[in-house]
Length: 307
Image (cartoon, rainbow, N blue to C red; front, side, top):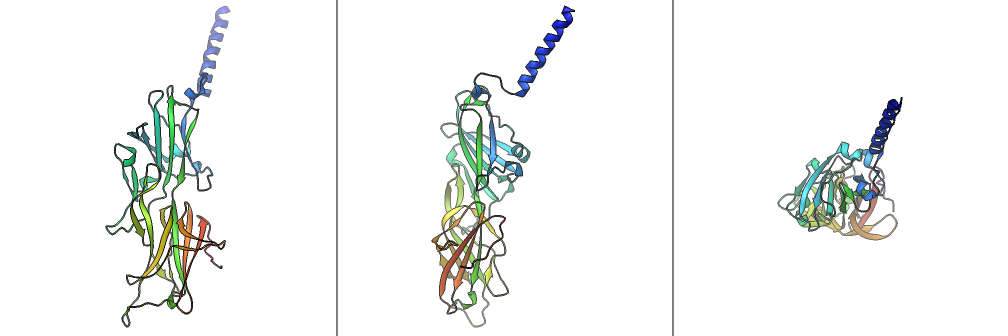
């Protein structure tokens, strides 16, 4: 009987130990039990990790001297299920973590080297600086210090990545009234929108870098002979841009600011996960009146400018 009781007690202790190990960390120092995970947020800082908007993440791991140690690839399943990111470094190692999301779409070029300053995520472009739209890029960074085996000083750590692209649409009002000089009799007129003063790259700190590029959003004439962009053009978020319209290769008009819906005048910006509508207006006498600008969140269909 004593043997049976001893066996039951021993079995109970084993089961208890297994339960405690599987239920969580039981060490006195919780830093050693901490873990590292990834969080995806939208432009309002709402947690959208489970939605799957970010399908892949490249995690660049740098030491305290900003030397690249490794690149960790996270797939969609890993991201949406908030799986633990395992980094195997000695205790007390200071790491800078840089995360870029949605690079695998292939609509940007990624350059890396031995140092953090070598990391650039650049739009593709032509020789004359015309840029092509990147994918819906997300970015975030985090500095951590390792503790124990797989833990971190300060407890659980989270790398938060934010959206870094927005869109632009453009249209005209009274374009047929705009004076066009230098045209030959009967010459057909073609128009082209252009957005200038954007940088081609984002660096390891998420800052715009590299050469200045421009975008040429596709346009078409509507039934009123106004030039409009039927689709949104994706680009990195940016400030102090210039919007222009050309005819047959000649500059018709350019603007650097406009009147917003609240009545204020401000520069042209591209904001993360929002669309910037730039409306260029002419009077009945052909005089250029200026631009009106409307910013709306993605998913909101409201391009009415009535001010």
